[in-house]
Length: 186
Image 1 (cartoon, rainbow, N blue to C red):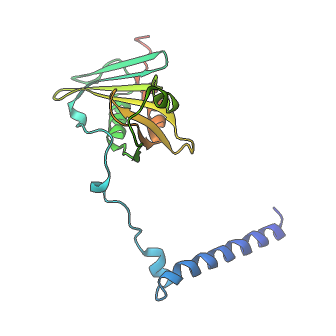
Image 2: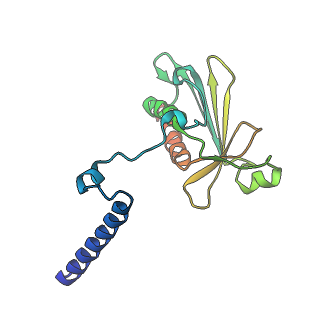
C-alpha cells in the first residue's frame, strides 16, 4: 500500500472512531474517553444461562460418538480413558459439552419432516454419555443454522429442537481425533 492509501485509511478510521464516540456519548453526555473505554459491558450472568446438558464430568464412565459410519467409544479406566490418543482431550471435550448453552428452542413439536430439515432425521452425530449415577445422556446433533453460528440439536429422541452454539460441531471434530485408537491399537 502506498502512502496515500495509508493516509486515506487512517482518515477513514479516525472518522469512524469519532462517529462511534459521538453515538456512545449521546447516550451518556457526561462520559469521558477513559470511562467509556474502561466501562464493563453487561453480560448474562452464568446463572441466567441455561446449559444444554447437566452432568458432572467425574460421573461419566463412558463416551460414545457416532457420526456417519464412524463409531467411537471409550471407557474411563483407573489411569484415564481407554483406547484414545489423548485422555486430556476427552476430558476437555466433556468440559466443552458442559459449557454448551441453549441459545433458543424452536416452537412446536417436531415432525419427521421438520427433523429432516434440521439434520436430525437421521442426526448428523450422536453423543452418548454413560454416567455412574443417573440416566444416560444422548445428544443428537444436526445441521448448522443458516448463519452458521449455531447447531440444531435435540436431547434424546424426544423433546424440542434446540439451537446451541456452533462450537458443538467444532468440538466434536476435535473429540473424534482424540478418540481415534492409539497407533499400537490400530
